[in-house]
Image (cartoon, rainbow, N blue to C red):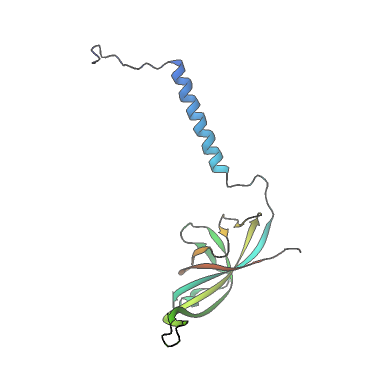
Length: 167
């Protein structure tokens, strides 16, 4: 059926205003809860944590750019993950089959190296996680896309050592 008088078919009334206001308030409450859900209500004491990141399959010579004191950040999420305290390198390897014995042996990849970077950062701890001050979650086996001044690499967290831990 057509509206022959060119009048609006729907008129705003007080009941509609109440419903709209309730939806806006509920959305605001949900957004507030969602934004504050990751923060703890009581400030946890921070501790120094040393952890080791293995960056594998990097170009040979890239390790010369890694210096003690460099600030390392996660290149995807842009979290600062700590400061370099030490660095070690070894030739990059990949598993290859030994056709004579049937075993799998590590084979050196020419022109590539694996870099182990020891990182120091201040972290807060809970029962299930260790998190840096910037919000980066540290767990053994977590994939890391680390970047420093003039270098970047992809690897995994391979060791965690907590300081100031009283037994």
